[in-house]
Image (cartoon, rainbow, N blue to C red; front, side):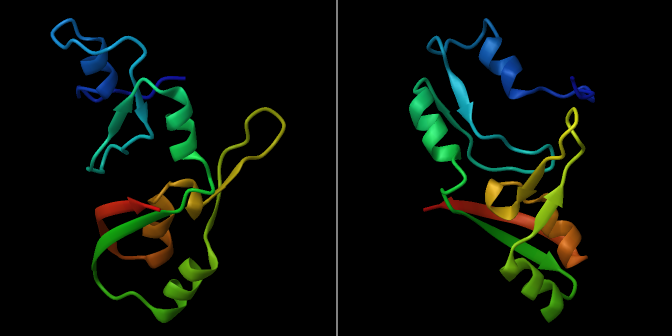
Length: 121
């Protein structure tokens, strides 16, 4: 399944472009959402990529908040946020905040967030 491209360049375009010379087997570690910005690491080491993306690697997000964040919303974040994703086949998938997807924070806090930085331990 492919998403609409909205006339924008994607990382895959640059990697496969003949104008850019990169080592064979180059891959991105993780991803950046369309509305996000930050550092994207590239590697040819599949094992390193896998280790960095594992669920037990803690990710920390720095955000700038516009509006009020209630104590109730903060308590929900501290307890962990679960996201229900569409069912794939006959089983339903779930992700948590530790999976690296920061979109759930926007909905939980009910205010505008701007991601400033991420850190991994």
